[in-house]
Image (tube, rainbow, N blue to C red):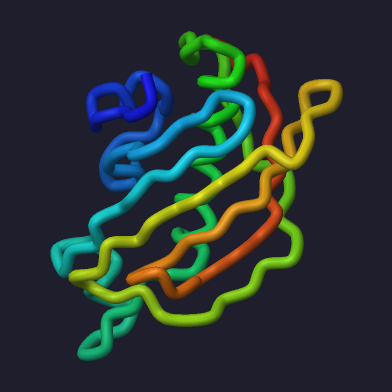
Length: 149
């Protein structure tokens, strides 16, 4: 399957509202690349304080969306879904660059590709864009961890 609807996204991520930042996967090539999107709405809870009168989607959440998309790609590449004792955890972020604001009404497209995987550590080159204009880019590192149930 090349796309994932919200219910399939929920099968691949343990995140739930208000921290689920992927609405749909529009392209997934296991072992290579994934493209997903987040519809940014004015109703997001953080816009009350970030920033009143001038709402801006927080940069750390843009990076988190890129990490969530990368985790889905890792699971799809291994042809498995998470079990209650497995999480992909963010362990590194390098070369983060913010180029434009993401605001209510935007559709933020996240594009992530596997750069390498070695001994359970995954490195991805990821970007988030709006209207084909890059908002953020970063190297994302995640690893699979077993957690207590």
